[in-house]
Structures are given as C-alpha cells and as structure tokens.
Image 1 (tube, one colour):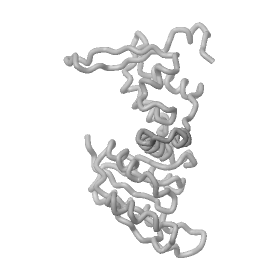
Image 2 (tube, one colour; image 1 turned 45 degrees about the horizontal axis):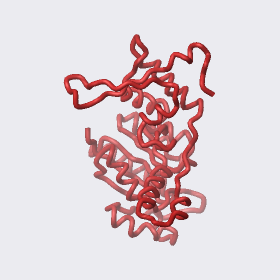
Image 3 (cartoon, one colour; image 1 turned 180 degrees about the vertical axis):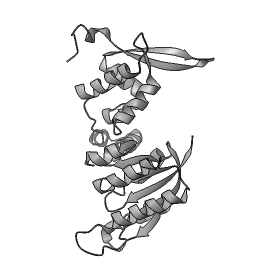
Image 4 (spheres, one colour; image 1 turned 60 degrees about the vertical axis):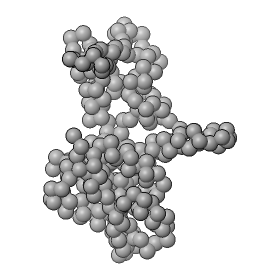
Length: 258
C-alpha cells in the first residue's frame, strides 16, 4: 500500500548533504505529500540548505530561537506534527532528526495508528530509535551515494577513501535472527524470510542489512553460516521464488560458531 507521508525535518540537527538519497529512501515507504524543514533561517549555518530545498520541493518553516538554550525548532515541529495528525491527510510520518526530544512525538503518533519512520545519524539515542516503527541511519544513505560516485571515479585513491564503514555482525544479531526463526517456524523448523524480516524490524527498528554491508537480508543470513536457506516456488506462480530459512541443527549439539 502506497501511504501518504508527512516528512518533517529538524534542520538544526541534520546535515544538508544526502537529502536527495534520503528522499529516495522515503519514497520506498510511501508518497511524501507533505515535506517541511524547521530551523532559524536567519542563521548562517543553515544557508547551505537553500539549494537542497529547491531541488527537493521541501518547504522551509521559519522558527526564531526565542531564548538561549531552548530549542524552539523542536516545539514548532511537534506542534505541526499534531496539526497534520488531526487533519487526516496522511497515514504516516517520517521524522528526520538525531534528537531524542522527538521520542514522545513518535510514540504519540504510533498510538494514533500512524506509521512512523525515523531517519538520523548513528549517534541518535536509543529511546527515539525504538519509538519508531523503522529507523534508518543517514550513514547508510551516505554510503550508497559514495558507491555511486566511486563507479564514475577513475581515481583509485579516491575510491579507497570513500569506502563505507560497516558494522560487524555479532552474536547479538545472530541471536535476534535465531529467536525470530524460532518464533515463526513450522513443525520442521522452517520460516518464511519475509515474515522473519518483519518480526526483526518490530523487535529492533534500526536493524538494516545495509548496516552490515549487505543490500538485502538474504545475503546477510547466508554469510553467517548458521542458517539453512531454501528457495521454493511461490504458490500458484512458478515464476517467483520464496525464501525460507531454518536454524542449523549443530546449535542443539553445542557446536556453535564462534
């Protein structure tokens, strides 16, 4: 379902770069019918946003800082979000910020049955991350942009310097996948990968295969070596394959990979 989304950006807390990639990412989840960015546009450090806003049809909302140490931008963004919620014009929100101050807003929107997608840097506090249905790190989008640049770049040194850093798959991630399989598996231990991905997302909103250098969940799971993977014909349609996964039996005998 292609839902209508309200995209609200904290201009004081998000870098201007990679906005194009960010909007492309948002388009995967719905139609961004409302696009607003909040900040005090009289401040010089926000001037670099001007070209980006024009290119992506994002409406700037002026919010003066009334007193030192108080973030009026956050308040303006929260008030607008509630106005949009009650207008019944959208079915979801995309909150772009690395600020934990939006944790309660994300929770309130989800209570109203809104789909809430968060986008921010890896420094984003965990309370805001888990308050969203899905949370996407800006660093992933930067990495994708770098890969595109590298393909057109003849300078090997430049390519090396732009290689994205990725997180290491730890026992914590492996346990998350294992437990999710156990939660959804049939009597033979098999579970449909699509259902596994959805459950993992609910358990950990910031889980994304791209964080670990994989574009999709299937190659990530195959790389771990602790799961069986099987392709099956989709019901009533042999043109498409469904992926099923299963925990390997060696776990039961205590021979776990280190």
